[in-house]
Amino acid sequence: MSQKIRGVKGTRDVLPIDTYVKDEDPWVRIGHYDRVEQSARDLFPLYGYREARTPVLERTELFVRGIGEVTDIVGKEMYTFDDRGESVTMRPENTASLVRAYVEHNVNQQEPETKWWYLGPMFRRERQQRGRYRQFTQIGIEAFGSPGPRIDAEQIELLDRWLRTLGIPFEMHLNTLGDAACRPKYREALQAYLRSRASELCEDCRKRIEANPIRVLDCKNPKCQEVAAGAPRMEQFLCEPCQVHFLGVQEMLARLGVGFVLDPKLVRGLDYYTRTTYEAIATSGLGSQSTVAGGGRYDGLVKELGGPDIPGIGFAAGVERMALILTQQGKERVTRPLVFIAPLGDAEAVRADALAQQLRAAGLAAEVSFRKANPGNQLKRADALGARFALVLGEQELKTDRAKLKELKTGAQHEVSLSALPDEVRRLATAG
Ligand code: ATP
Ligand code: MG
Image (cartoon, rainbow, N blue to C red; front, side, top):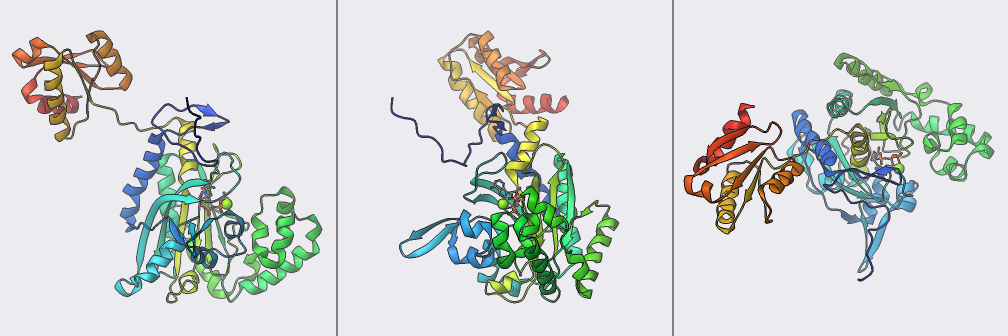
């Protein structure tokens, strides 16, 4: 035997086999992913979001400008390579790409407001942990052209509804970062405070004091968190318009009945992230990687990436983390073959293939046994597959066009006509 080739570190396979625990990290079954994705596909269009797909590969420059050189992502986590003289990067997130597409296709000239959602793999060279991978999947939304605050609250309500629909326990955290008018003063005050306590900070945070002081507030190091707890708060520095905006978001959330907690630690480190930030944090099931979705307003980003001065806001949710929670809850929607057909001989096999074809053409799931086995074993196999009905086809059935459709859960036998099988199955399936 040749040597096995293993998957790349930090990537994972999502397979349609039973969940099992490996290194404390449950293998996630495809059904959980499917539930998360399908619920987004169903829900987001109800709010006017339409799907957009952008490439995995983008010019590196897009992320350097769109995420920022001083961030962990751009500083050390990107998969960047030289493509014959051009530096390209596998997207670490999707907002910058969507903004690029929005600007490149002059979308603002076609519609004053745009709502897009997306789903796809993202790549970051991070330390692998439970809930943290090098290839992971995000589902997110972006809204361009609305200065808010009503769109902010609408997005938070959407996220709230989505997570509730899925049965994910969470808490919605909310903060404001101010804007170009008021944040600089806050930044200075924060810097002065952090310099005075620099010796207590981790190495990364000591560097952040000058480059990106606001990021110190969400450092996960416990000592840095202690320092952050005593830091001056943005709230005390907000200018009038930012204050009005923030109160507007909170009022509308209250009107819509969405619960939230104010959390001054929720930050984005870069100047084009303004005002509202929000995060849905799981209250059980994830341990330290507990942020399920993070969002915020980026009023300066479209301009930063060469477009007009148009505001934007969005969130990104981690599908693996959501699926992990669902795995632990054991909730899964599974699609199983509805009818399992077991032919006993060659002539019956030919008929079985045709019957399966007719069932599928009628939108009914069907699976044909390709093995030679006695009827008892065939029924066992149908049961293991979770089929609803089993049909054993022998000479007699072909001759008379009559067969017994066995309902596996109850053991009930229904006599059906083979030539009208799709209609018979549909009738029985809807009857109970
Ligand atoms: P964290 O603080 O957990 O590192 P982040 O601030 O880097 O998150 P965002 O860039 O805002 O996260 O991404 C939004 C969501 O995408 C996260 O809340 C998380 O659910 C998911 N996510 C981010 N990075 C990863 C990863 N490496 N593996 C799995 N999911 C991830
Ligand atoms: Mg991160």
